[in-house]
Length: 326
Image (cartoon, rainbow, N blue to C red; front, top):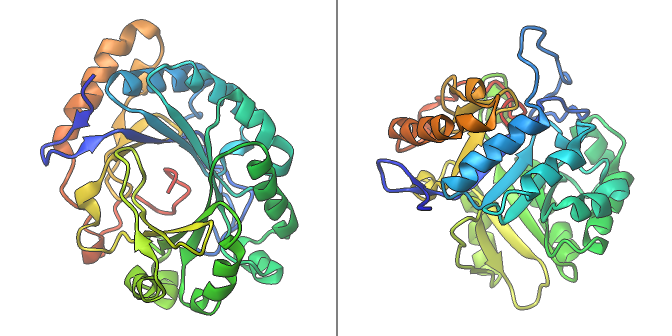
């Protein structure tokens, strides 16, 4: 099956699938006031509905699905979700993005269920600052979870760090940490959202500043795989770990877009910063709706825009990054 292709000839191998918008952390750049339930919101997709989403995208050329939230492991049926997607032969990689609080206990179980890659959010190597950023005193548990992920056999564990001004002082510490560990440290530019304008103005730091530092220190750009995420990946002969830069404000960022998003209530989002979303849920009730489901997904790509327009301050429907999985 040929991959999904939009009108700009971008091919889409990668689906980011949110399974909940609930999160137990209160990160300052995402949910500073904590999770606020929406009583009017539809229920989250069931395991069967998630399996039908995976089947449809798999038959349309998708090879990688990343499970996101909120915090995806807040779902009690998380292992069942992994196993259901793992049954789809077209899906070669199942990844998750997590705050890491359950990893120490569950990494091996999730690996056995079919999970193949883990991204852990970790915005500081200082326990006190970690607590300030996340609102949770869970630094020790998250670090233990990272170790447990390596022990469980995940070939590379990725560490997501939101790039903010204060991190420039901590870069040497992060580099020392990955020197002898097979970790991929990914610095992600802080993105402006509807509820985070003031925070963005105060803390945003361009990834270009960090890219110049890395190149000056001998880090070299690595070739990008077709189903890889948006990171520019760098390696160094003296380091076992790697560094990735995700820079949505880079002028060419959207040229290599290869991912679509489905929210936890079954809406297809063509862009993290798009509007509203296209409802798929009415076609997720039975297996015999697959042809209609795939046709709706395919036809929706005609509406995907060339860029996200973040440079113009347009944040779309993204009130915060937990809403459709960041």
